[in-house]
Every structure is written in structure tokens, then in C-alpha cells.
Length: 145
Image (cartoon, rainbow, N blue to C red; front, side, top):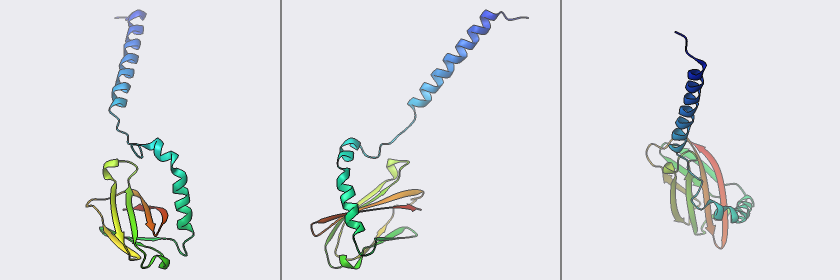
């Protein structure tokens, strides 16, 4: 039995439409997370982050980050000893906002250890923003768990 060319065109057209519908449905179910909810406002303030990172670069030695099983230790330079620091400890997971971990810490020590959430794995970006005295500092490092 021979199929006429009209049916072949109809079949090709319907296959194309079905493919487009499939792609639209698949794309609408895709999950994506922005870096922050107020991304544009944060971008406008980015010069402050640059200045804070420059302050951190002026320290005698860089901040040291050591990871161990279930915890992470952050050590500040000696000139931070005895100075009260308000620290924003933020582990950013680029692939899924639900796996981010953020904590506010206040300390006068030059070292602190933070327990990590159970099951943490993958590449994270540790973002430390701290204020010592009236000066703000920013440090960022990639950490793989």
C-alpha cells in the first residue's frame, strides 16, 4: 500500500508540532535559581564588595579556611586578635538555593569552627563578610565537600 505525499506532509507537520509542544512543556518544568532574589539591587552595590575585598587583601596574611569532616574552620590574621567581629558566614551552592547555608557569628577570637549541615556535598563558595571595628572585609573561596 502506497501512502500519498499529502499524508507524509501531514505526518511531518504533526511530528514538528508535537516536538515543539514537548520542548515547551520540558522548558516550563525546568527549575532555575538566581544568585539572589534582588539581583539587580545587589549588582548596583557591588562596588562596596570590591572595596571590602580590597580591605581583606591589605591584611598581613589571607584568611585561612580548613575543612574537616562535618565542620569548617576559619582563621583570621593575627591583627584581628581581640577585636570583636560580626561575621556573615555564607556557603553558597550555585546549583540549588535550598542547599545554601548562612549564619551570623560574633566573636573576638581569630579562629572559629562552624558545624556544617548533614549531607553537605559538592562545590560551594564560602563568602565571608565581616566587620571589625568600623572596617568591613570580604573574602571568598571555593570549597568542595
